[in-house]
Amino acid sequence: MGSPRVLLFTGKGGVGKTTAAAATALRCSDAGLRTIVLSTDPAHSLADAFDVPLSSVGSPITDRLWGQQLDAQERMEDAWADIQAHVMELLGWAGVDAIEAEELSVIPGLDEIFALSDIKTYATSGDWDVVIVDCAPTAETIRFLSLPDILSWYMDRLFPAHRKAVKVVRPVLARLTSMPIAGDRVFAAGQRFYERLDGVRAILTDGRHSSVRLVVNPERMVIAEARRTHTYLSLFGYHVDAVIVNRLLPEAITDPWFKAWKETHAEHLTTIEAGFAPLPVLKAELAAEELVGIERLRRFGDVLYGDTDAAAVLHRGEPIRVHKRGERRVMSLELPFVDRDDLDVGRNDGELLVRVGAYRRAIVLPDSLRRRPVTGARMVGDRLEVSFGEEPSRG
Image (tube, rainbow, N blue to C red):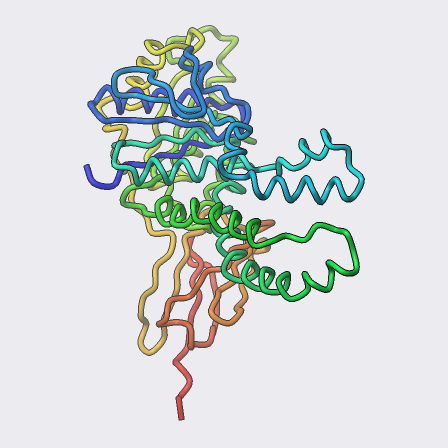
């Protein structure tokens, strides 16, 4: 196997995404694939699902399966020490108590950045055939998966300018104030920190190897959130290859008390299958027992996948493509379920700015489009089409 298969599982809290991720990991390892499953969810329920202890550097679960639950605090000395020391110095200068300063220097979201770094490490090490990520609930997952874009934008644009500015003003500020000023060591630590993530976006948006699987329950609010998540994932270039519908009421239940409930589930299932088409929909009934432990997870995986290869790419789509129409060029972005009122498109030099609701992405334009003016934008089905006119004459 060349590049490893990377599978990310997400969904609204409580839908069973950890169970789906754990069962998929077991199924892949049982098929002979070297598999590692890790969690980016601060709730850390992965160890509970397998009913085995997991460390922050990885622990064996079966012969071919390892699991990891990240402890951000354990990574501090290795990856964040110089930056943390500067932040603590600043907080101390501002009058913050030493113990409070130490706590405040652990920036929220740091564990997500460490997890991205681990995904890159596992995907490039050559030691694994499958890397499975049990993501946090959907809102946190969108933030998690947008981090590579945000950090890349900061490091390419603001970081060099900020570093240069500090070098210029440091001698002046040193005479005017006792406030600690970041030195080259702090900036170098920031650069090393970013380099751990450099390339992770290319790995996660490569649809030949990486996919997201959405886990839902047959509930109206859960389905609505999954639709929004699909839109935002597409905006950032991530490939969704399946929807997992979990906790359907079993056909074996015939008690009249459940009749209306079963009819509602059937209606929601029809909505999911029609609304998310052509994505495959994998189904699992509500289990009669708590899905904890290797054997129960294994049985759940058998129900979920049947004869399907759990590690296969179950659907191939194109979040972004560029094609030619006469002398014009058209960039097409897959944005399923988007509300036109929530959509805004703009242009800033060599970037196309697309906002959907609260999320905005700056898409770096390819060379073939950089000099062409935007002439229009419209929704065609579930795709946003942005038209570019002819290049201006160079005369």
